[in-house]
Length: 189
Image (tube, rainbow, N blue to C red; front, side, top):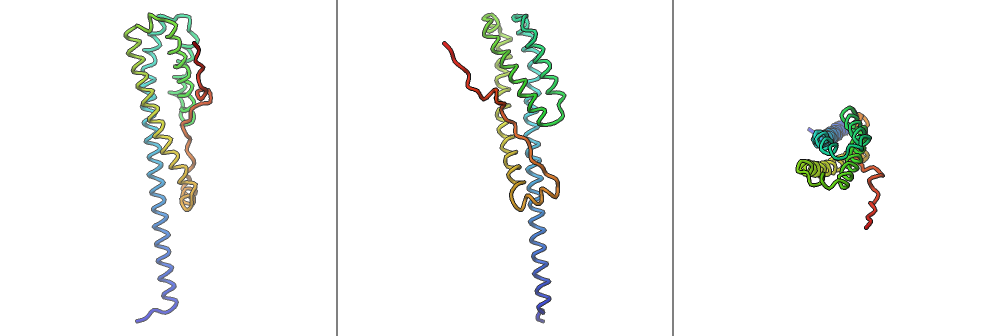
């Protein structure tokens, strides 16, 4: 039994519909996996930010004993830490984390002015823990930015951009270094 011309057209249309549906499903699943990867990478950053946030009160209390006149800095650190804990959005947390990093840098710079603080065992231990945490944050930040780059690129290319538009996938924020931290420090002898 031979198919008529209309029968072949129907078969071709069905095959095309199956191919389009398969492509659509594949792109949707790919976007969903990438979205979860970005969320997972962000959760890793939050974990390390929480660890850093937990170390800060101990570090501040240790420095307070030596640098009592640095009250404003201690208040700025407490406020930045609260802002990080209270921020509900990824861009808000990124901004608060960058602000807190700046204040921590100032706190550690103050320690240079107090030789007895630099020799304090508790301070050295906390400084080492903080340095390790900062390294973990840097690695997690890199992984997060890689996941965001992959996701943002995918939602912009055809045909994924169509699927992303239908399901409301939007561009994710990178965890970028603020301009103030991009400046090369001046070294003076």
